[in-house]
Length: 521
Image (cartoon, rainbow, N blue to C red; front, side, top):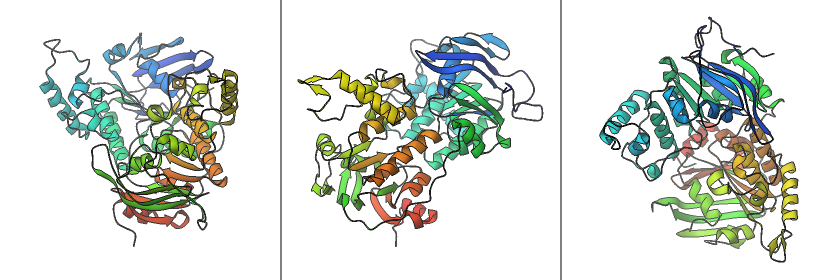
């Protein structure tokens, strides 16, 4: 049996022998027939960074949503500083000095940073809030914690990394003693991740407690003092981080050994072209040049990885290839056909599949069922229609088959897409796209925010598609992923292709230089 306080001892300075800051005891939570949490004990001490590790759907976020008051537990109790508490809403949690930064940011796009931070705050002259005071405090927090942000900027003008800083500052404004960060690095580039870790360590040094919900093993080793591992809604391990290693954590997380990544794939001579980009230029939503005279070829049965720092034209490239953005110059050739500036529907009909970066905003309709999502991109006059009406029997049978084939953990085809975990949402998108048998696949950040088990599943599906002759353009901010899956790697900087190299012989230093704007000699 796993002791509730494994890894906690007077010799462990990160979690000394004293009254815990917070304890969750016997927490259980079910959603219909799905067991999210089962009799979980979780203890947290002041001054520690505690990683909550597990696959997507393991129950990590549900457990912390209960602590933050977004969900009510079916059974169990919560103690803060040794006293039982009743957390019925986030307002109760905030009053207890508990704050949470969610994986999907909860910001009003059209409001400024200061206005978002000030939402819900009490004011001396209610209902009027003095934004000057808010701006002053934001600047103080930004300086103290190394979180630079412009209080007057609108959220819609900020990068993803800047938006996360706003969420953290919004939490810090309420002076929490316990901060929960849900998958905090899933949308960050390497430089931003290191800055985040410095912030987390500073919080712990100040005597506050930080819970990092994650599935990334190396990050657990880098930033945490202790780790609790969940699998299928139950605690399977409690460990002191310095006494474990990534391999042990991986086995405990998924219940089996994870396959090691391969090191690049030997490049075969290109015969048939899946995609040809010829001197393509395109502008972003602000009118600035996002793609600048970009050219490359992608062969059938090849994975071409696109390596680059986020915001260097990758999004616009995917949109051009899927018909969602017009080019101002150049040609887009798909399977030998000139499809420059064709519509998304025409691209789909010519065999282009797209795994979007934003799985929630662009990949799925959350309030539709799993079965309905699976037929969204299917042409009319198919087996899913009968006399111009939807054939629900065929639709449900299709869902049942694909749920099984893609190992989607859900309550059945009738369940809403929004009830799925991130990993299962991505599997649903993959099932929707691959069931159409595309000949070209644009994969944007296909494993972003996913655990090692889901990542391995996605990688195997991509390699399977390559074996079947599909040309795959892999756009990923995970350089290890690009280097291990690709046949060739194209480096992009400020919308320009700086060079293309075989993945099997690519050197990290060379890739880094091209990502930084140094053209390959």
